[in-house]
Amino acid sequence: MKIVCIADSHLIPLNMESESFIPGHFESLPETQRQCVYDGARQELWKAFRRVLTSIGDEKPDVTIGLGDITGGWQEGGYTNDSIVDLAENACASIRRVGQAYFCVGNHEMGRYSLKARKGSMTERSLVANEQIYGPLWWGIRAEDFLLVGVASPLFLYEGMNEYIREEKRKQDDAIRKIVRSHQGPWIVFAHDLSVVDWLVNRSLGDAITRLQRVVVGDAHTKTVFQWRKKRDKLAALFSGRVKMMRLIDDAVLCPSTAPIAWRGGGWLSVEIKSGECIIEVKNNPVPVSVLPNTWRKYWSWYKPLHF
Image 1 (cartoon, rainbow, N blue to C red):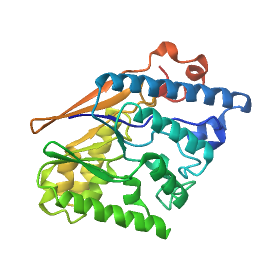
Image 2 (image 1 turned 180 degrees about the vertical axis):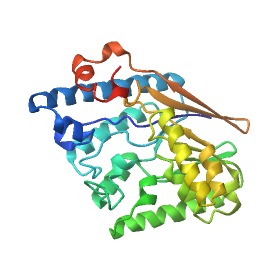
Image 3 (image 1 turned 90 degrees about the horizontal axis):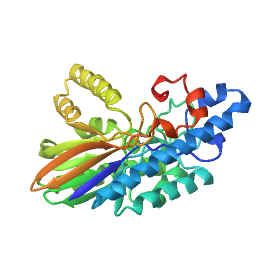
């Protein structure tokens, strides 16, 4: 069985008021430049997304898994505006044209989960919109001897008091626990970010945790950032005495971003399950420097990783 993963496309709508893409920088630009730079960013994000979908289509996968932040949200509140919903439906339809698809939504789709967030928060409206667009927010499918489990990691981290969201959080906890316990073979978890590791080791999964082969995530965009986060989380696990968590962090794999943010983008992940083995390969089709408009290069030089 051949699986491809795509993550962190960060597609943004026409409306700059969405604040769905590094809003602080756009606010600091002269008003005459803001829209021009924003439009340049939007076009390049879409180009990178389409390049990756073309490459993925050539792979002819059995399943495509979206690992979150396919689009931005509306002012950190997730899918609470019609322009964002239309954008997400378009992006999701593009991915589904490649073939059968499952999704693990991220913080930009669902909204911020922390009470300490500067702006925005996860809402019932956003949660319902995500399920309508992407389908089940958590799922389990078989791939030969392996069980593939997808989760919505922002739900694990939700700290608010909305009863509907809290109930969905409980449902996910119970469903994943039941799915994992019923499977006696190896399994792989797919999620948006590494926070899922902390959840896994703090739930009563029994000996199933020892059969977990890989944790596949997005969010970090590049290998460099991902390795730094793994070291940070391993250090925290070491000081708290959570040995199981350290092993899972070691075994975690990054799906690089399609968006040219912090690197040249165009990344995806190939996962092949064959004869009881799981073979994972990072692939990419980076954005050529020549396609970047002058406005992008000129005004984004403040952010060195984006300045090619």
